[in-house]
Each structure stands twice: as structure tokens, then as C-alpha cells.
Image 1 (cartoon, helix red, strand yellow):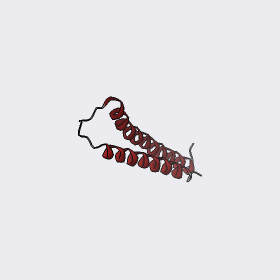
Image 2 (cartoon, helix red, strand yellow):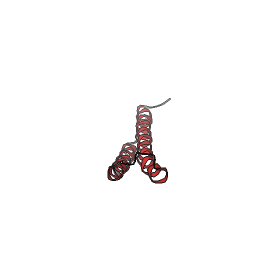
Image 3 (cartoon, helix red, strand yellow):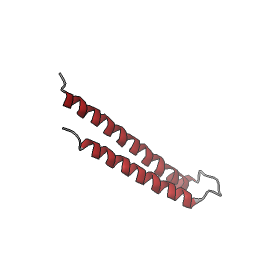
Image 4 (cartoon, one colour):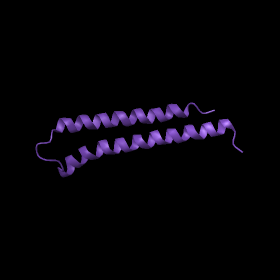
Length: 78
């Protein structure tokens, strides 16, 4: 039988896992496009390379923040 603290801990672990999964997806998307553009040139010739780079940095930063949020959530376990 689970106690209230056990249930709370499991919910916190689920939320932390969700945050980390979203972080992984954001980082993957943010690095895929610039890499594919560099290797294969998948975007039109007039694509702004600076904008692609800024988007990649934003995605990496957002992914890091989400990952750290997941770790912070896990800090609340009892």
C-alpha cells in the first residue's frame, strides 16, 4: 500500500520525467535543423543563417532550463 508521500513522490517523478523528455525533444529539434542545413543544405538558398543559429541557441537554452527544472522538481522528493 502506498502512503501519501509515496504517491506524491511518484507524481513528482512523472512531472520531472515529462520536463526532461520535453527538454530532449527541444534540444533535438534545435540541433537537427542547423546540422541538416550545414550538411545537406535543406533550406532555400536565401535562408538567414544567423536566424538559424539564434534558433539553435534558444532551443539549447530552453532545453537546459527544462532539464534543470526537472532536477529541481526531483529535489522536492521526501
